Length: 262
Length: 265
Image 1 (cartoon, one colour):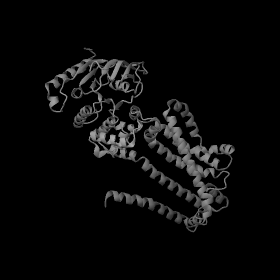
Image 2 (cartoon, one colour):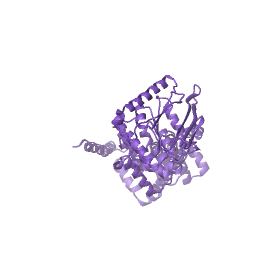
Image 3 (cartoon, chains in turn brown, purple):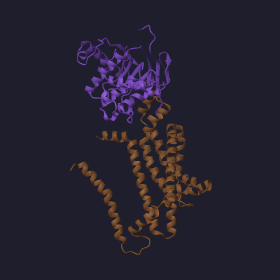
Image 4 (spheres, helix red, strand yellow):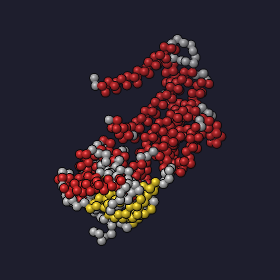
């Protein structure tokens, strides 16, 4: 067998096999147990299908959650890139703001939830603000760093050919910073998912976070676990979509690195 | 030609850098003129401020005093009529753009329409012999081919002055010979004025119609020498001419003197 084919078979086997083994271990560990807090995989699976795969919860809880997550991270990415390129390209602005940005980034976003609730109330805008307040930082700081670290030879090239304005932004600044920006976006997505759940645990009446907390309070333990499984699935799906986009956006970067590694 | 106004006029150019240990004088005072259609090589010992001079000429760096004039207008920012080819070809091409798009981007910035742009790009890329690599990315090409792309980009830009900063310092000898002949051909075909900076004495004599020798820093001009070799040059026969040997010996001696700090005029 070709080594490449064997390698990909092994990685597919690991990706499928390890989770199956884990579920088997879980089934073995919980077999015949009366423990209320750790139900068997079968029970969680039943709870999963009956709780989440019905139209009502889909529209009342899952879709609103995903919508808030999507809007929140898109806002974070747009704000982070726009502000980051402006700050990164302006040395005085950068030295003025950078210490402050590090300070704000160091604040755990959850600590801001009570403040944001005071200012914005308890509707969707509060939840979006919580998501953005935490997930904007990696995009912003990485964009600043990516723009700052642009190759001076390429900058001279762009200057001497008088490539300026929107054209320079689209074809020079953004792509030059894109490897750093994408690393920031990856972090932004995972922070955004965490904050989506947390924001729904405060004064909410819908969403995945709310539902998990609700089931816990109702002692619906299998249902609670099934919500956590759903969050895991959402996380994996988001990571997969990110990887697809990243491969497209950074194909030149991966290609040139492969070449320079020989 | 001498009675015509020069295309590029450098007057008492001086550049001083601030450093932690006080100001460093990179360029003492440089004055020279270049007329339209000339091919001038600038050669000097390494570390003599060639790149600083070039950055001042191309408007990328402001001189401390003195002036650079292109077509009578003072150069304070990169001028439209000038294209620069840098030594670090791998870092002066946009790795996210294909060969064709790299060549096309400066034309887009000039507002040239798509049809005209495509035609100009094709012509320039063919001129440097890379027609087959139009849709490749720069990092898929060898070093010499990458520098050809940078030359194609400069050619497509249709500058009046083409400035090249040690463009072949990082390519192997065989490729270098090919690229030297490419520069001569581009110069003859397009009638563009070329300013070619190099540390290689043989290269300066082989390529140039005129060689400017620089001193060590703080840099001044050691000598301005006309190269009276035949216009048609060839790597084998030109380099075998007795006159070529005389000229290169002369330039070599001058550079050695410049290194020792003797100013001979």
